[in-house]
Length: 565
Image: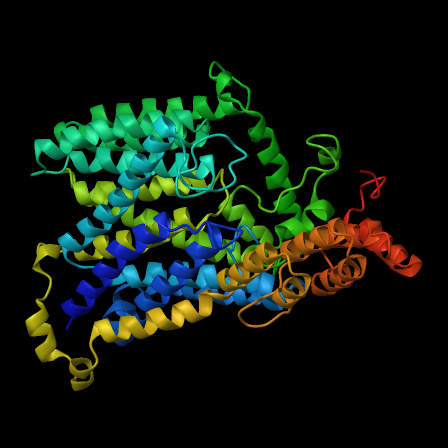
């Protein structure tokens, strides 16, 4: 029988852990305040949820959710296959590139979060997931409001000059606020919701949309319009018996969406939507496809898009956006996975999206009455998928998309019969029917064990960054060199090597700079910047410069002058 105690543990983990990941940043002790800290908590949450999944309700969940579990299992296998088939540094693929951290550990943790969400049954559990999303959104709105009125109290580099939220990037906070606004709109139409909530949601939503506007990121506006528009369809569908009204609305909405897309491509009456970044994304997408053609079965390696960009970019990229303009992501999550892991990883990820879409379709067909919980889950999920098509895979955003996939599939299953989700088995009866082992080993204990394992697995990037930040602040060359020595808690990183070389060369410590330059190219022979640093280092030998030049031409074959400034 289903173990409701395990479900309660999962709910607590999701309601506390998911918002905490979105909100968590560290500024004073690391050089990357956003991504490495979020990876740490994502690993902790993912392994905790997966541990509970394995220990409780395993047979029932396998029986009921085999398609999604198969797709996620295949995805994880394909991620490992990408590592085995790539020449990129193992630590870069496991922990991800600096400033992104979307390597194997991140994808395993996200998959585990999606799997863990399948333990949800009670309607209150799904509501708590929604509350978690809205808590994270509300706190970001409050933080962004403070920034707009009084200035930012967080001491971090902000080259954009716009609001960053707890994502460190205006595009990400814009997209997240769009998801948040859409969830508020969807949940406001839930039967039994108080007018106080509706009024508060309206006020907060308006403030959040103003912040989307102030972020100067179009994707937040697009996500908001799409999300609220979908909510409108479900509301109309529940209000009118005739399907003509809702279908007409859907048709008009589709026309508006197509017109907006054409406008983004500088066609039609909405051509004012176009931004320079649209053209750049076309280059990045084309480059990702070229990578998949070069390595169709394993890709170029997890988080290795940046190493391959110069080799795979189309010829026109040399002039537009320019020979020295590069990117370390495809700015499209599915295409990023296609480039990094080849067709196997891409298709397995696509399978999870299809399964989530089918869950939405089944519930839409089955329930004409407005179901606020379902619509909120569905709209939030769709909004995430929309932004993922035009944006980078950021952990603080991605966790909601992966979690909602599992939640939607679980909600669809839980509402198939007339016995609603609110009639899930009680904890007391569950304890009587479970084995003696489950009576001794509680879900809380299992979750704590998984949490500890997840922290141990995901902590190295943040530990290494903390050690490196302390070494730089000490201005001690020996301590800096010590911080760069590879180990479990200090995985090597091309970006850190580049920073070290710049510091040593700027301090006229040329022997140390030369040592770092050689270590950098040995660590990652496909790092264009590392070879360039070695080539221009004044005390590099003639043979080293010749080798560096050869590799620069290999990594940037279409560039007529790889030594140009």
